[in-house]
Length: 245
Image (cartoon, rainbow, N blue to C red; front, side, top):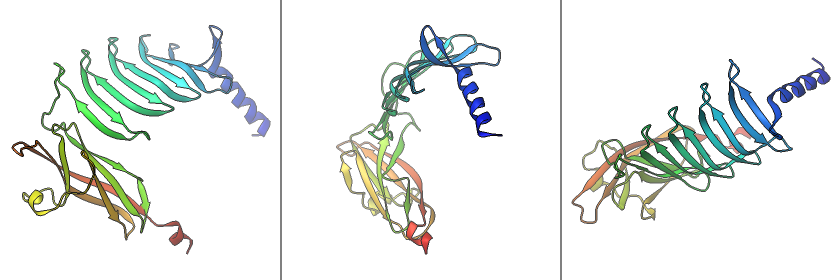
């Protein structure tokens, strides 16, 4: 296929997907049977900019999203088919700040908090009456690596927190999670702040690696203790210097 023909096909495809609706340039997508599926306002550069709306096949609104220069910026709201809110997210320049998840009957189920680069740093579970939900299985360690993959010889650095924690005293111990004496035998990791432990691993071999341990939280008097075991995997690759040799 010649370059001119390929360009012509691309132009035809772009025109079929974008058109002016109500005097505004929009990106439109349809279901197979012709119902409108998505509509997004686009700017002169073809970027989504403004309110975007997605629809169920029955015509009900599925989602509303705020865009700015091609990135999510503002709120992203998903709806159940019954019209109730399913999820509300807040974004800034494409990065999530927080997400609220709701049950189909309208109760807040979970609140998730993100850091400045879009990684989960906290979450909280709730019951229908608005009280915090600490039932078994609702607490999970949160791992925040400084880099997802490191070169061999480079330190793998990891912040560890506890999601849906109940108490303000949280510590992390590396070791065998099945060892009943792990808390007494092993020393807790150093703390970055009162709720965040930091782990630094010196890497000396390539491949997938794993660490295990427990996160434990307690009240001030040590008369209430909750232990959450974990296994965390990470990957070490060959350094660029080794590859060039």
